[in-house]
Image 1 (cartoon, rainbow, N blue to C red):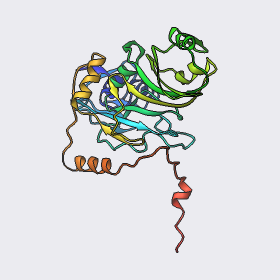
Image 2 (image 1 turned 135 degrees about the vertical axis):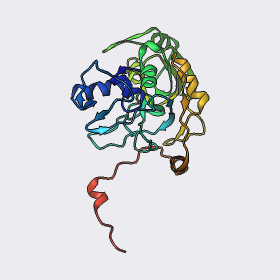
Image 3 (image 1 turned 90 degrees about the vertical axis):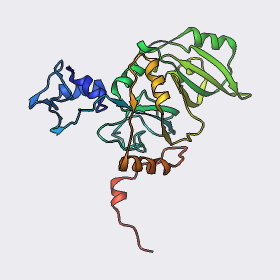
Length: 288
């Protein structure tokens, strides 16, 4: 089947559609020896290269994988950070012939549920505002909160980038100045939860995402660790946005052994561990 090149790369989990479009615009993609242009189409059996590296796309889009990651405070949601800060990709398991794409983002000071998939189309669909996928957060606020404030937050507040609102706000726990609430959003603007509360002169002291659509943060996934979703949960995500169901990838042999070994070695990390600098890593250890 002929498909736009950026869609083919996204379905294969090589890149998101937007990223693939940038690669094509920058002249990094060739098809059968010719430089690709935006709008060009190809099949999974064509010779497609990125930066000269041949991609194997014969099985592209035949399966999908999804990870649930419990993000600690201190990690950024980018693959390569120019400031050298720890990223959410640092502790994910390696993949063969594909890569993890994050579904949405969390700012550096927000913890909790972050989804990753190898299916770029699924990621794009789950993030797009037209899909109406809601996100739920547990938030600890400091300040006086009354019923009138909660109604304003649900009706809508004009922020610098437009109207924003919570579709639901519920008291959860706490007394005095520090209280926990659960809030629900239908989209994910930058720092939207914090900015909505701050618009009411209330300070957010802790923020954690606990749900993305139909997927809740499992209680058996400690901070800093991940777990791969099974077929039923992956099907539920596809159904949520009206996409075709696909089988989860079946690992065998060495790939399966390596994955299980990495899963067992995971460590709980309440806060991100700072990256070691290249100089520090290369410095020889002192003899005792």
